[in-house]
Length: 398
Image (cartoon, rainbow, N blue to C red; front, side, top):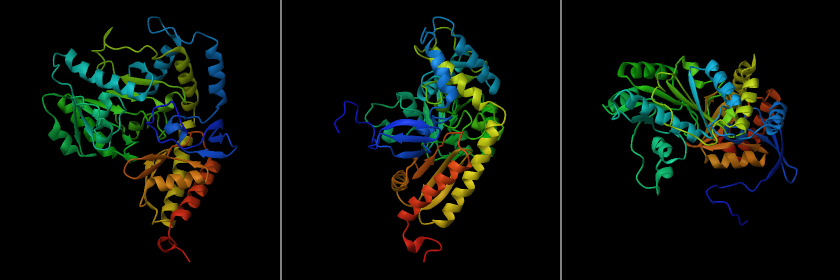
């Protein structure tokens, strides 16, 4: 089919016309259980009544006024993010990549403000993904995203995953801080060990570095805590949020302590659309649900239930599934076969998943799912695995 869109996506030939909770309905009437959630975006699923009503109400007020004026909705959202996290200040953007750009600039500006502009480099990790802007592809370091776009933006030094000695060895007089995702999303659902994060925090404190966390995919309750770093008891200096914060509406946020953001004075950064009334209203509606008493506890419980079933599935299909990894409702299945084969087979069973690096298939369902949805998803995954597995490599095969 000819399209006027850039051919930068390998799109499945499916068009959806309606959504209900964790379900998507295609134009031919087929129902799909959505365990992709728009790549961890639809934290409350499709058509959540509170979000729909909030958007209707917000649409009757000014949609956009620009940041030349006060935006009460954004002020309220910022205050709630501060109260729910380590942060003192928030800058709103439109996406995760923009939130990361702000985080990178904030870290660099901090040292420049203190009289050390040469300290602009950030240490990053193999397997990272921080966005698609020129700075964030350089931070991620993946050659397939960098190739063809000219010299990579300077200022990023990549080290092996969770290697503290390598971090320490990479620190120079130009190092500003360390940037990482507590749970790597695109990199294959690899969870940084909590002991490593605590040691990294101590190292940053000892060497005068800022700890910058990319919580774009793993934040806003995805792992069962508002921020994934909370599992390790670690407090960053700067963190980027997006995806689940808008529940499907584009919004990003850079959170920072007052100390870390001291260089970000009037005119040092900006965004035309960032924190506009519509986006901020939806962000507040998402927090109404995610921060409600008991909600994150249910994410943890459902995550444990999902994990048990996935590990049992691995035992039944060891020739297909190599490893199950993740946290909360952010899980990955590392496969022995091409991960695209499992994702395709699952889609044929009407289950939507997401590919990731390291030959992983991601499961990122809405945070509002229940046991019945998980049972249904596992049944569909089992059918996909059964289709792909050769009888000779399946345990218990006749």
